[in-house]
Length: 299
Image (cartoon, rainbow, N blue to C red; front, side):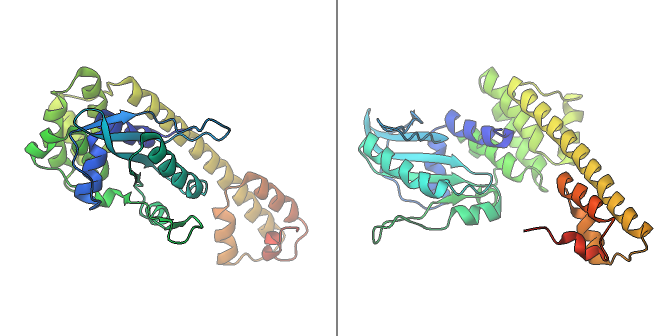
């Protein structure tokens, strides 16, 4: 299931196509040609035959009308996906062929470990043909606390709230972002208000709630994904609770048989979340001669 975080980040680039170019050149130092317009292009990179490729966002940089001088493929990556080591080079090559101009890749990876994986060079096999993806993490996103900067790029300001809103300057970011958001069209304004509010630390949220005399999510998008997130959180909590109960049953069974459970075995049993494995351990607890024998899975 597509996550709210993924969709929010993708929408920022859809709402402001030039954001991709600004981040590549101003933050990551990737040189770009002179252009006069940034425009969304089709994300469909499907070839005439079999394979189908769809990027998250594709932006065309145009010079004087319809002359494409660069294409930027934006990919939001929240976790490792080995397939991307093969599809990203295809995205770049196909975009270059379809738009007949150079192509860049911009990977948005909020998590530092995922970002490090994304940035690893991709060897294509041809000598010297190596793709080194430029990767933007939350730490790389500029901290926007200046009203003029927020007005210049509302989407960058919202991205700043997503990246830094839980930090000490969450309230400072909100104070310059929200007035700008209020000047946008209704649909974007409601969406961005929700995103910023959801991204703030608890103290900043309380301050905003007090100022607005309470806060309710306004956009259908946020209501939908927050409801999904809450449901997933409740499901994960129920699953954790059930697993914890099964783990305690394993420990209780072992103790009832007079077996001593050392700290390492106890921690491993309590940390287990796989209910099927815990069920096997309960069955085996009736016959093992030591707790460590529980972990000897049949080959």
